[in-house]
Length: 108
Image (cartoon, rainbow, N blue to C red; front, side):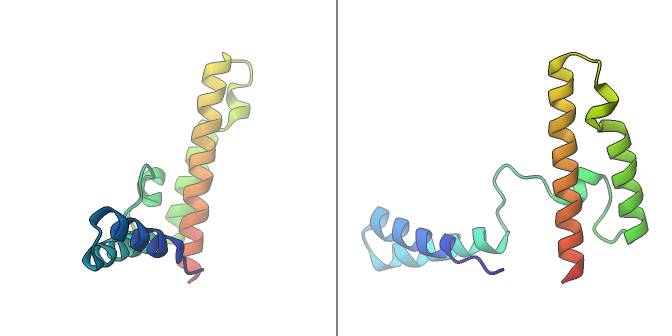
């Protein structure tokens, strides 16, 4: 899926902030960087979350995913304090998102 809204919003913001067509071009370039995934604010790289390199095999990625999920699965800390359970749920959600992102990138 190609995203386009970063380019549009970047163009409009650049034009309005600099009040010049060159500002629109700069905003368009920044918007393209966001759409292309070059700039990911607040999101870690999926390979770093799983603790593997980008040239890892599918088996290594699956093994890292299973290891991390067995460590951070919320059911493992079911009787623990609510704060600990919430952190485990957040970490498990992050691990699942990273794994899904890697699988999506490799299917292309």
